[in-house]
Image (cartoon, rainbow, N blue to C red):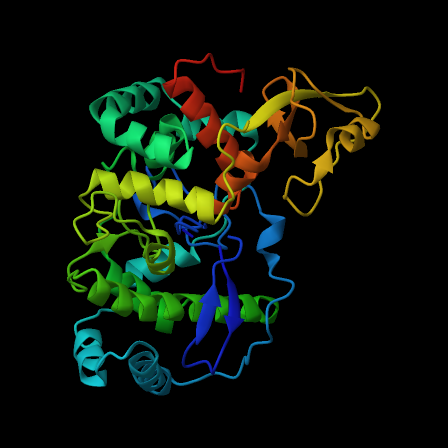
Length: 387
């Protein structure tokens, strides 16, 4: 998941501290990254993919970064030293583990892949919502209803939303990724591809530092959760488990749902469901019983309003002044953000509330959030609106 700001940096040798932004990219950020169907091998956060570009991903407040090239051997040595100091892990253990890591050319190639054009909603939605995925979600929910309902009652996050996330991310656990996470993060931490375009250098350096920080966190995570760092697999961006959490999201938001003393996002459904819900609550500010999104109309002759900030801070009266009216009754006092989708018969307008915003924290894409929401509604037996 992924979607994060680099809050502080020591040198190019290590991101000393990073916070999840904003984005999950999807990471979470769970993964925090735009996904492809059955996203076990999704593009990394910040890469353009089928998800729409996210304005909040720009990182306008990010700290300056040193663009001076650092030799691989120096960066690697700095990483070993700084990760050992940061997490109290013996440097010899880190060194021995990195000696087993491999730079994987397919990962570099995947990360270097030219950006796909941004698909309109009527092309994007079918990648995530199909009759097979709806039926698969209903079957998955029925199989795990007891665990899901316990999480729903405890957190307020509906069971069908949790199921929809797993369906979109990994096809209900069927495709969690085939790359060793150690290799994926090692490759992107020290060999993040460079385009040679000076205008892209800063972003490329920041992405490399992001993955270097995730690699450091992987050492802490596997120690704390008693995981074999050389064995766990995930996406080519290093996202793991049924919900595709990056190491930082795993550390910050994973929950021990079954009380066995571990947070297992690979095999424990209780832990997976609880962790996704916890991410929505803690990272996204999920509101128990609150709406996600409702269709709206835009007054004829008015231009769509596309704010650069996605937080739902606009009152219904303010949106009405811009020509927006919800098509169904909405409780007084709610605030929302306007959403414009390119549908098969023209523009579609929606109002997204706090719980819609919470889904965008998992992956920085308004279309991703809408796909998850509509899939959840279909799983729950609601009729889908036209794409």
